[in-house]
Length: 221
Image (tube, rainbow, N blue to C red; front, side, top):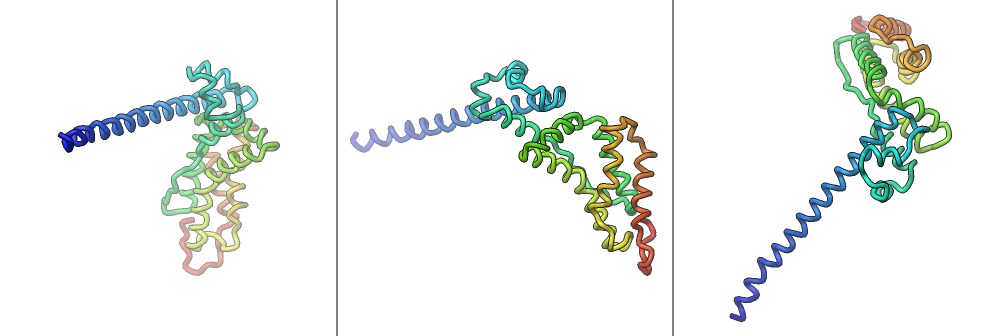
């Protein structure tokens, strides 16, 4: 009997531990869902009203998550805005069409489509404004721009390696010359970013940097 009692107690201890782990997992799941709901709502609000019109009270109203819960995860309005804004992603796949002009045109066409349709495109101007005074927002803005530039930089560097454009070409200057006109049309002139516009930009920038003295170079740039 003395040995049997502890033997019967052991499963009880394991069951209690398993129950505790299950409760913790359920709590963690609820916390994750709550955080996701708040961040999704916060991003939607940013898309509609920008940083200046963002309020925690409106996030509470739309998400149904209590203000006390929100402030438990984000100690201030600014912290929630920054976390929501950091969800903006502009990264694209890197094509390999067989020609530099084809690659650049494909990237610019996709970016032009995103600038006209993605929800983040309406948030960026307000982030740019705040980034002038807030280093954390400047970091978010820098991340967005690096996402835009990364595929172009990669195909340009690949083209330099293949002898398609001059080894003296400056990738940063080329990226600016390629993306800048799209930004101008999206946020300043409000003109359409159509296929012909994209093709013209790609052709003009590439032709200005085309390698002319590389023997046996691939002419499909």
